[in-house]
Length: 415
Ligand code: HEM
Image (cartoon, rainbow, N blue to C red):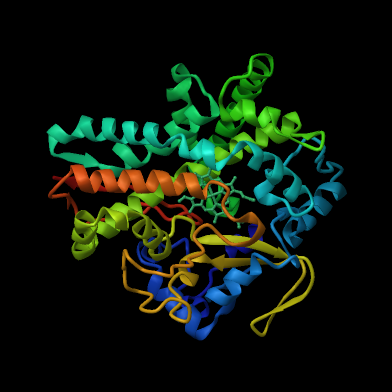
């Protein structure tokens, strides 16, 4: 890792692809266009290969020759080897990766069990509560004539709904929110995150585990009508989630479901404000809310990168990916591929069809997509309906430092 960190690639080598560069983060889309045209499969000096066209991005996530399990990477194998040689072998017995980072058959088994609890009906039942909560947040700011969309709305909605859904008692809600803030960069590779942030996110993750351990014990003795009790009870042919699997699933739901949805709401408000004709269209025809959220997900997706490890040497668009190498599929680029989406750089809230890959494709397709869509639809529609004259309060839009997730640091608006 140290060696990789020291490599300073030239911008020419990377055609401008540098996720560590704030300028790139502000607007990665022109760079993605260069990549698709000139190097659809690009080997970078960061030790990974980057795929930017829709065809490769959408097919790689279905391909069993590519793994979601980081332990198949050449880097991880080298680390295990070095630890063994140093007399401190890695002990994986107490380690239970969440199913996002597992392959079949373990992934199939765990996802199947969790799906039994995370049902469409459970999500749909949340509709009135989501509406009520969004209304409360808007009520609190309406008299002031201004709000900071990320802090005052987008951040609070997903964490509150997930914690209530899991069955976290309301007196713990603030502690829960504070830990969630620390988990924000959990999806970024360690090489990209300052050590103090890694330490804080590790502590938050441990706090969550301890907290859920206690809550699981309570719910085992006294089940309630909540997701945690349903996860404990989920059974398939006598098979159940173990304690470790329950814990990593709870933390996964938080990591996968919180910051992603914050960014959907933030990116959505920004795009509507930047496209006033589309905003007026939505105001006059509320039935466009569903395709509008799909268009936000396509046009400026909260998750920009997906990673897979090659299990064997494999040809991808003429480039050999070697066993153990990591391929990053650029969701943000695939979603703007003109070979798949006509007028791909146009934000059109009525776009149909719209087969974007913001929630991935294949066996790991986002398990929380229905919840994210519901929260995004209600938050954006309610804001547009209830807050006329919504305007950006700044020209200086800054993005968070995250690599994998794309989201605004702040979005001040006036009305
Ligand atoms: C706009 C918001 C969201 C986006 C853009 C998003 C995106 C994604 C993506 C791209 C993946 C697949 C990663 C891969 O292929 O390796 C994924 C997986 C997942 N997401 Fe989401 N997600 C969102 C919201 C949520 C929510 C609200 C939840 C739950 C509360 C959730 C739970 C999950 C889970 C459990 C997985 C793992 C699925 C598996 O590995 O089988 N996500 N999400």
